[in-house]
Length: 403
Ligand code: GLA
Image 1 (cartoon, helix red, strand yellow):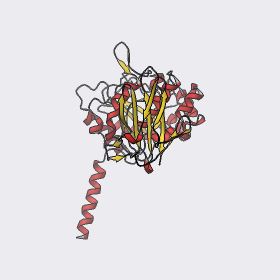
Image 2: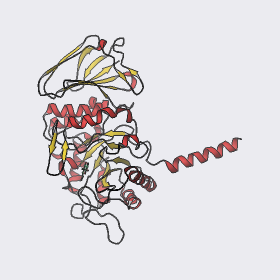
Image 3: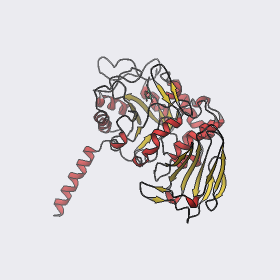
């Protein structure tokens, strides 16, 4: 009997290992890092990577948790190697080759990521991975790539779940632990099927550098921060340690006001969103550094419980967000989306805040919490009194509620 159980156990373990697609135990908290796309598009290079890596260390970003340096579209030659079929890093942009670039990034205590696409071409028309999944995965493993963002352009006629599963399996087979980031813009609701396939999935089209509304270009448009938030907000039941909703790279430091950048960052923290900076790190202001490295805000994002916060109310452009944290604390964030000054009045005792996923009750009627403002770094009383606070247009206040 004992022997039979052992055999059965061994068979089950074998089956789990054979079918487990993604690398487990990665991204137990939302991934943090930097991605080249928002600022540089395809104008990327070895020099940019080195300067950015240096700056991630010098600015304190690495020590605040930003460890993934990810090159987006534009790192390859227009054609695969005619003999081997391998992808080739552009030798003008990356004269030392991608392995040397990866080594440099690693030598700084960082991790290195690349981009490709499940279609026949990337969005900027470089070779896609369709049909080359295993070969590309082996190449990334040989370079020591730790993170792959996988896009979905030129994929007409392909099935998203099938394509992403195939790449995920190929990465697993290549045996170098790697975070797999799905980027099909939420079109096939990856939150319903990708939990075992990847570690994060985009939930929207591309973010644009505006607080709200839409930015229209010739043939495409990008969405302002709050539009992206609208698409991501209700997906909180689908996120957790190892699988995250991804509302796109951040626009912090790319030209919005300090107030707007703080609100943008605060909501990303409340939503347990991957914190992937998208600004030019070599030129950022002290204000931008302070926002991106606010350790109390990051602690809310990186909380080990891994709950995505939810929008508790949304009335007349005044929003209230809650996020349960480990150890019984909560985070709360009041956001003024409108263009006029508004006053928040929130009587804790009259509200019924419940995190629906596990029916966790804030219970502020009975439990008294101390309020700590994570931006102003000061106490703001307790939940024994109603919270009354003026918010300028686009301003927010994010607080840790301490038990
Ligand atoms: C798509 C993605 C972006 C970026 C570009 C690169 O638009 O959504 O995040 O990767 O492709 O071409």
